[in-house]
Length: 275
Image (cartoon, rainbow, N blue to C red; front, top):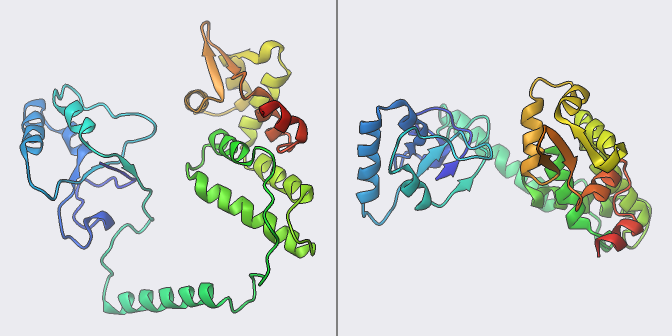
């Protein structure tokens, strides 16, 4: 099951059809069918023993399993499927408009590849500074991604932070990264947090027992989708839900979230506390 932002029920021209070599099945289509017909279609899929398998596409994947109405076999289908999540490009179509466009794309791809391999701008040093990892580097990077909620690719975030620190050390003429580069990374992580989330973290960290009413946090954020943001932070473990409409910072992450938002990530005191 491919979780991707393909909202059309016609998947024939999608990039994951690999040039229309097979026909992916759109799972949102099930939610538009009569239950009897949808269950019959699911039963056909479950009984199919073909070796090549099937590809199902789900666009409504935002942190939950979509409701398939009273489809009795939908759970069986989901448990037998390998779930992969890929965000497609805005284009999303594998076939070019004509041969000229196809040739232009190929030439541009070759040019970009040559720029990366040959490094004509001399952007990469021959002897780059050694990477010395800050205290709890991976923990703080994942914490920032969970808090910001803009994407979920921790590998890309970590790679970007490492590259930034190494290039900054290279500009300063140093042979390895040090605390100067760590403070730069801490600033980047702090700036990645949206202002409405920074406000509620600052409010909770200053409140007794780091708790506040949901209405108070909603007023501080000043967003129409505030309930969605609070629920997302609860799913990622940043906030904890209590009865009587109360949210609190999760004790395990309270100190580190507060330091991250304030631009003080990777501090020695935080490192010692984490150990």
